[in-house]
Amino acid sequence: MSQLPLRILSIDVLRAITMFLMIFVNDVAGVSNIPQWIKHTPADVDGMGFSDLIFPAFLFIVGLSLPFALQSRKDKGAGLFSILAYIALRALALIVMGFFYVNLENYDHHSALLPYPVYTILITIAFFLVWLDYPTNLSKVKKNGFVGLGILLIILLALLYKGGSAAHPEGLKPHWWGILGIIGWAYLVSAFVYLFAKGNLLLLMLAFVAFAALNVTIHLGIFNHRLWLIGDASSIVLMLGGALITSMYKKLIGAKKYLDFWILISFYGLLSFAFGMFIRPYAGGISKIYATPAWIFVCMGITIVVFELLIYLVEVKQKKDWFKLIKPAGTSTLTCYLVPYLLYALFSLVHFHFPNSLSSGIGGIVRSFLMAFLVIGIVYFLEKKKLRLKV
Image (cartoon, rainbow, N blue to C red; front, side, top):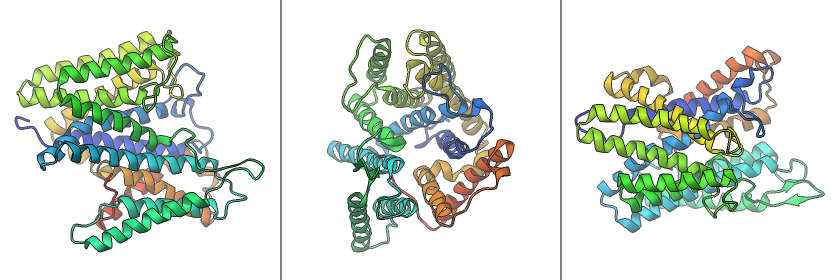
């Protein structure tokens, strides 16, 4: 570890684990008779289940990767405006995908021209056409043709969309932006903050504290306005928290201050968890739906400690092969997120349903784990065929 790698392998491993678990919790949400601690906790209940930890962990991981992604662009000779465009286009891709997917929740099965599963498959194919990591040997004409076809398909599907009901029809609209949309908006703000802070730890810490203070004061009722693009800043706090940890890694490991890094990352993990528990009674308890400060900092603390363990296992003990089976979830993460939309839509088209034994209790939990492995297996196959999203 004397020479800092371009990528910290443990970030990929943490991302793979988190994506695997995200597929699992999304599937297990449709399983009945499972322990309450596995499920999402209702909005007005002060507490969190295992499922409530996955999304904030993913936001934190996006932050962990952020300094390396922007540094990689700089190392390739990209200037300020090129990097700004890269950030904006990446955020736009996530926002567009999240926007369409969240509107699927309001799709009118009865009056829409296309059946729900057909619409889902087509919009997902359109996303692949636009944001596929096309091979370098593919001609520019062909690539632009595929991208143009994807854009036209997105526009057509936007025009064909029908939501709500026959009595109260609705068009596409940002209900809550969806998981990908939230990540996109948070990435847009966090990446700009990191870029203009130039990776300076003090400036990053001040920005982190400012956004955290905004979230806390909103939930304490001191500040009653949610800001445009920022909202209550919950997602930005998690993302900047990840960027701070990576920035500390780069500074301290680059200076060979190994012990200082271990002490600091342990301290910040425990401090985050402790602050979350401290603020819990005063700012809405722990609630994922309301994105309360307690939920943010408890989840961040847990994720930091897990990341610290993975740094030890992967970077120090070289145990990366322990996680080889789920590696595609860490290298083709967005592809992993989109594949279930295709898979479940296909199940619906052929009227496939899991038997009762795999839809309830232990059998259902096992099924959800197998579904996660199935998705990762499909993504592994797609990787071999050079089919992966580049966002």
